[in-house]
Each structure stands twice: as structure tokens, then as C-alpha cells.
Image (cartoon, rainbow, N blue to C red):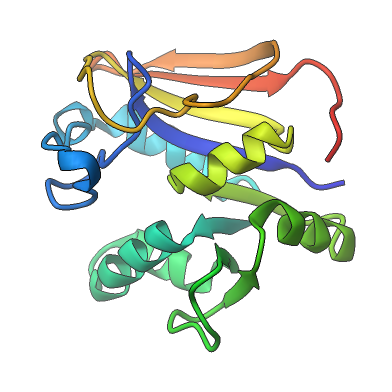
Length: 199
């Protein structure tokens, strides 16, 4: 069966909320949006780019992340990621969106996220999926034991507030598979599940 990989930027205290922009996600009065930007460097870009390019994977996104990506990436005509994201198959877990979805190569998974992702995996057992951001969706899949691999970009700062990756999740033991430290101190660490769980 194909794998589900979570690609997440987070702080040392586990915050994953709004790494990219000040206005990305201000829920709960979060004031630190864009915290990851000062730590970007060519090493990080290369590693994440190589990881994404080395696999023929579809994206699995929650509603908020999908809408945020769609509001930004299709307008970035001078960025190579735009064409990659446009052409990549995208599955969107949402109880509120309706088809047709506006971004090319997008398919709606309506209803309960865990149920619809399991149905997708049964229908397409060789499909590999990458979850980018999508905190609520990701935590639902984590609680259901459906994440096979974590590619964590751990930034050397603490925020003390914000939505955290592991909030409300009882996670079993993980096996470290790889790690690289960037020039700005970001640890890019890959972890895999130790044991098989119900998927």
C-alpha cells in the first residue's frame, strides 16, 4: 500500500501554526505568523525540493491549507513550484467545500477525513500521499495511526503559543531515518513508524 508522509515546519516547542506569513493563520490571536522565513536557506530548499521531486506523490490537504495555497501559488508565475503544484494531483478533505474545486488537478474528499482517506487508499492502493501543513487533518490521521513518515523541519526557536503538531495525539515510538542541519540551524529530520498500525 502507498504511504502517507507528513511534511511539517515546526518550532522546538512543536508549534506549526502559520510558518509562512504574518496573515497566514491568526486563529486564537496568534501573532507570530511568518516565524520560519528568517531560517530559510538553500540547503533547506534543496532537501525539501529533492524529497518532493523524488516521489510521484499526490498532495493531501485540509480545506484551510488548500484555500491558502490556491490564493497564492497559481499567481506566482516566476516560481518553479507553481508549475509543480499546478500539475500535482491534489486531494482536499473538507466537510464544507463543494465541487468543482477551483484549482486544476483537485478532487474533493467530502465527509469524515479519516473515512474518506481510507476509502481513497482502498480505491488506489499504490497512491503515495504528502500532507503539507493541514494541522487539523494531520492530527486526525495521526490519531488514526495513518501517517507512515514524518519529514519535520524543526526550527531553533520557541513561541510558547500556537497550534502544535502533537496536541491531542498519542503517538507511538518512531524510528529516526535521516537528519540534516541547515546553515541556519533548522534540523530536517525524517522519522518512520516503528510498527504497523491499522490503516
